[in-house]
Every structure is written in structure tokens, then in C-alpha cells.
Length: 112
Image 1 (tube, rainbow, N blue to C red):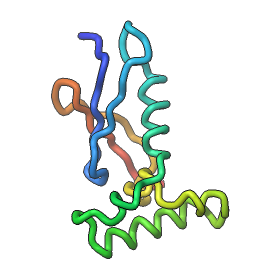
Image 2 (image 1 turned 30 degrees about the vertical axis):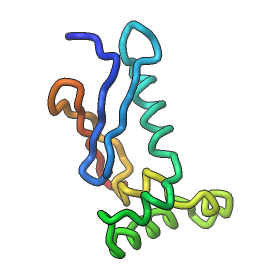
Image 3 (image 1 turned 120 degrees about the horizontal axis):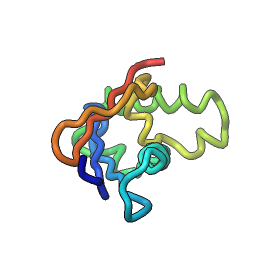
């Protein structure tokens, strides 16, 4: 199996691709995948991402609901606003990764 220096992770509920890069010249490690996936999904979304033309009022309401559930009333989290992980809604349990084609993997998730 060839060594990977970069992989792209997609999910049907995420409007972007997550790029994972190898932290060493050898290849991408399990640590690279989990730490970078966590870091990228933990980012707050921008005003432009929330108000883009692809999202309708129902989508924005689902994002706000997911954010409220994730924050559990913690003011410090509420202040940070909607995060990328909120696009997954209740599907926040990772089931695995499925290879779609060279360098592109689909993140499989399920509800809690």
C-alpha cells in the first residue's frame, strides 16, 4: 500500500472537504487523522459560512439546534457559536472511513 502524505475526508453533511496532512515524512498516522479531524471540526464557522446561499432557514435552524445541544448551556461554549461539527447534527459518532478513490475518504458517522 502506498504511503499517503495527504488525504481528503468528505461527508454528505459537510459542505467542504477536510484535508489531512502527514506530520512526518513517513506517512499519515492514525494520530494525524484523529487530531486534525478533531481540530478542523472544532473550528467556529464564519459569518459567511452561516449565511451562504447553499443554506436555507431550515439548515440554519438545524445548525443552531445542534449548537445548543453541543453547548449544553455552557456560556463559554455558546459564545464561540456554531462550529463545523454542528453540520453533522446528531451524527457525531465516528463509525469509520471508507476509501472512495485515491486520496479521498468518506467519513462514516451515526447518531449517539
